[in-house]
Image (cartoon, rainbow, N blue to C red; front, side, top):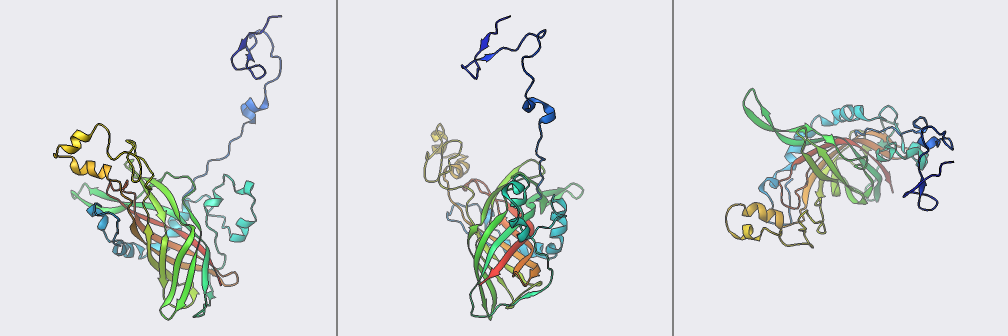
Length: 350
């Protein structure tokens, strides 16, 4: 019999026998794992899913736009169309899942399905949750799930020969990790109404979207330090919460850019560019922004409309419209306005 020649990929002794000659039958049947008929693939899920305060005086002038006025304009009539626009693209939109349904699922049943990125829903549509003045309440298990992502862009009207700013649809580039969940905070009731103050939870998610032209816009979706107020003392299907929140920098001080520059570590300036930086000619402002890394904190605004209530479990659900600014690359770029619409869920407890 022909002697098999070893090669450098053996399992037993660091060698793997050569393939037999085509005229010789195989010594053993092929493994089912290598047969395409036995290979299965999991389906690829498609998920649809203020004045800005900065810590540095070197912040671009474009950042000082007012978010409150823009949000009020967009929020008018937006709540009614959020579910129609967002849920139509959701792969599980036809199957509403309550919090009890989600808790009953095992890890293997949730893994790879995108259900972990979804907010629970409430079956009941009408009802009232009575809140008494002077008593302490909490809004827990709060979940905020965006369904649509829009970015403000300059849109050119070729017929009129003019351009105007408007929000355009984008393509979500982030996997199913953009939902905020586990948020909780205090719910105070007084003569002035209801006030929700966010305290903790998974209240931020790094997200990236892509504009129609191919430009990608990263931003930190968040509701940190949210203080939202509503009129009245009870939670009904007509309750509307609105307020402002803080948006931390997309990058932290330990982040290093491709040239090794950072906020609290790394080089102070790019190597091989000190002559250009010191000549006092053009290009100084651009280089200064790239070199002077700052941790910028901006403001955002959100409006939430409750449309579903379960008085027995004290669960609430509804739609939201949020507006915030995108990443500034630690002060090097002018941010863009990001408009998010989606659904939210929460539960009230004492």
